[in-house]
Length: 361
Ligand SMILES: [Zn+2]
View 1 (cartoon, protein in one colour):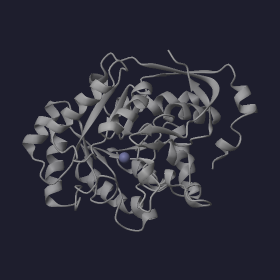
View 2 (view 1 turned 120 degrees about the vertical axis):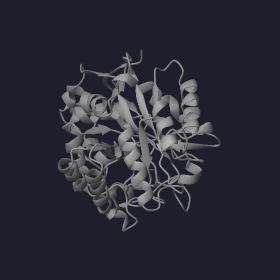
View 3 (view 1 turned 135 degrees about the horizontal axis):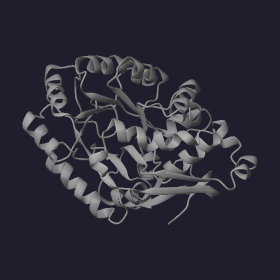
């Protein structure tokens, strides 16, 4: 695991004793809130720390229509009442989306289409069979004209460690074909994806907490840790370090997206473990700790809010929302899990110490 964890206590904490960190309107630009009992269990963690979350549509059934998106949004709003949290909805892109539905969605405030190649990850069974096909290109043409953004879980069906890299040609083809469509490379895991951002003005990216702190060694280098298994897979130390550097520098086209994706332990600890890491309870405190550790606190506000504010044009969405979250140097032990239904959901880095803690209001 990164040096960050090896020397978490001691000198570092003492040197930070009087430090306070203030963040304004933190935004989670990639979030899985699930549905039913799980939604109720996980939502408060994101709603407490973030002013807005981009809510992913891969439910069962997927959020394929505006009506479903609005119903889901209303439920999230109801369950997060009093927490000052804006759910920013996405629509699941599928072959039967037509201009009428897209126009309706846009009029209702939906701004992001989410594209899953079929079979790439949890809830992608209804995803797109062939991204570069006449039908999908037609839909994207309309989406570009209406002003949507396109969020993509970009993985090929090749060898698991090369899937994101192999998909880059699709990202670049789409970026060239639709120069006015903002396209988001979600949860970048391969350092070569960062080079594509430089080649195309309309390519953007989100980065998770786990991809900047872990490598495949942490997942299965010694004992195998199903809780750290996710899609896209956590890659090499070189990838991790490049992604970390990109996040710490608050690259203007990159924003934070936790990709917090809870699964019950009863499923995670099975012979067929689904991919997904639940990081919502620690995401913001841990980011504060990581940026402080690397002496880059001056870039945290941009990474976790300002970049997304600008790139996703969130002025009108957030209005006069002004959520201020403060942290101070106080170590706290991350809980191993939270209870859910008749099982539990493991929390990323459960049992470890987090250096910065939220100052509760
Ligand atoms: Zn995701």
